[in-house]
Image: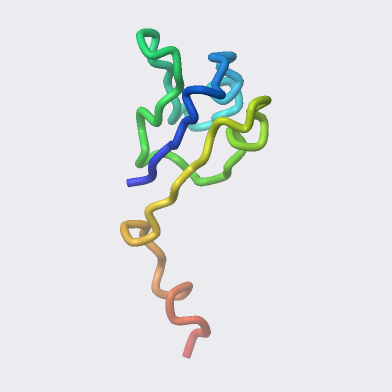
Length: 79
């Protein structure tokens, strides 16, 4: 599964990342006051959350090994 790395020292808790996540994969931990990837299987690895973070506190770490790729993409050309 994908992982959301959060620099807790940099994160201000503005929750902008939650607002822009179009699949609602990110939630906010009220106790820790930082976002987390609540639904990693829904994450589309679009990295919009990274791009809009005013403090550059987020990094999406994709898990390419478990990602499904259709055969046509993994083999290149059709025969």
